[in-house]
Image (cartoon, rainbow, N blue to C red; front, top):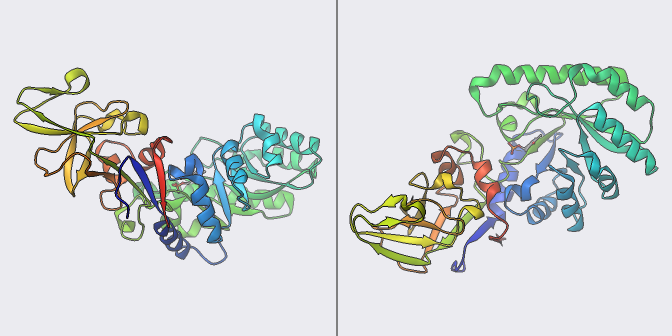
Length: 368
Ligand SMILES: *Cc1c(COP(=O)(O)O)cnc(C)c1O
C-alpha cells in the first residue's frame, strides 16, 4: 500500500464485500437486501459503495433524502432507491429521478399522490412507513382507514412495501419492547392486506435487527452500519470488518518543557519533558472537541498517543513522548484494529456519529 502523505479515509471494498456476504448469510434466500447508503454511505462514499454493492446484486438502496438519491442516479446507479425521509418540496424530483418515497403520514401520502397524478404516473412505487414505537416518522396503527381511502381514489401510485423501524434492536434489555414492535407491525400490515386485498413487501430490521430478530426479517432487511463493519455487539466483531480507516501523518513535533501549555485556552500543561505531535485533522474534519483532553487517542507505529488539549478546527495535538517517531510518519486515527467504535465509545458517542462526521475535504481512497 502506498505511503500516506496526507489525511485520507481508506475504504476497503473487500471488507465491504465480506460484510455483505456475512449479513446475507443471516437472512433467508427469499429475503431481499436493502443497503443503506445515506449520509455519503456512512461517510465512506455513497457512490463507490453503491456501485460496489450493485455489482454484488444488492436488491435495493436506501438514502435519507432526495438529493442523496439524485447523486446516485447521476452516478448511473440503476437499482431501486428508497428515500427514507422524503420532503414534499422534492416530490417532483423524486418522480423525475425514479426514486421511491417512504411516506409517513396522510399529508405526505396526499401530496405524493397529487404529484404523481400531475405527472401522469400509473402505479408509481411508494412505500408506507408505520410508527410502532420509535415515535419518529410513520403512520399510526389506526391510520389504516385513511390510507385505504386515499389509495382507493387513485391509480397513480402503488404500495410496494410497508415498513417500520425498531427503536432498540441492539439492546438485549429492550427485547420485550422490540417484540411488541414486531407484533404491532404484523397487526398493521395484516390490516392493510385485509383492506386493500394485496400484500406489499414487509421490512423492519436494521443491522442489529438482522442479527438479533431473525423472526422479523420478513421480505426485506435494511442494513447500514453492518455493511460498514460494525454490529453493535462484541459477538459480531470478528464477523464484520470495519471498511474505513482514517489515517494521517505527523506534520510537526514539538519538545515541551514541564509547565508549558499546548493549544488553545492552554488546556494541556506538560508534566515532564514531553514531545507533542501536530496532525493535519481537526474538528472541521469530524474529530469533534469531545475527543480532546485525553478522551481520544491515535496510534503511531501501533502505540497509543492521547490527544492533548483542545481539538482545533484543522489540527489536533497528540502526546508522543514515549513513541519513537518523526515528522512525516503515519498516524492511525481508526482502522480495523483500532476501531472507530472504540474511539467513539471512549468519548461517549457511537460509531455511527464518528464515521458519518468525517468531512468531505478528507480524501477517500478506495482499495479494490
Ligand atoms: C439508518 C436506517 C437504517 C440502517 O440502520 P443500521 O443500524 O445502520 O443498519 C435502517 N432503517 C432506517 C429507517 C434507518 O433510518
